[in-house]
Image 1 (cartoon, one colour):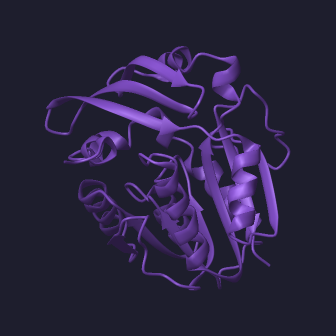
Image 2: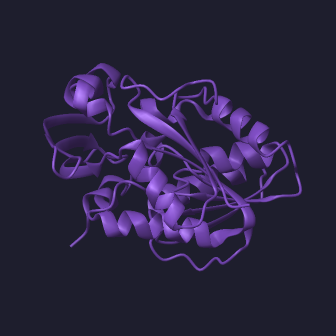
Length: 254
């Protein structure tokens, strides 16, 4: 039986790019460039690359990027977009819980909940972090965004998602947040690229900043910085607040 995150992205390559959460690519790539000191020699792995928006933008700027995703549909769209722009980018289908890379990349990015923290168990989410860590060279850097566990303690996830939804996008209902597991359970309604309507029972894991720090320390990251993640405008100047739906994590292995 397929998991909700597998069904969600089936035949969704076209509509995915119109979702509200995919609109911040340029600013996010500006931040990534700054974090790697504009070094064009480095090798970047984009985990959960979706339709390749970050991989394509970074490649345009002269960086060597490999994009991986679980969804055939999103990868197909990524390859089409790259081809339309005459870009040669390696897109591969992999499960982030089981990656073949070992000490190959200088930077790993996982943005916009590309894989972590969608898995059905905490162990699986940890496997994704573990594989990202393994893919990095000894002095590598990991940059990812994840759901901020402080947010639902102070705010309604349902109200937030409703305020962010635009016509034609995925909608969410029946949200319930479990304080024991920090998981939000909801029913997501979408219409795929072929007009098929789907109703999916989803659950996503929200993380407290201290949990993320501890998990990364277990993976031998030495420097771990956590900030508020503002879509399209990542910055080290944004202290993480309870108002932030997502957090930006920057971890270095050196």
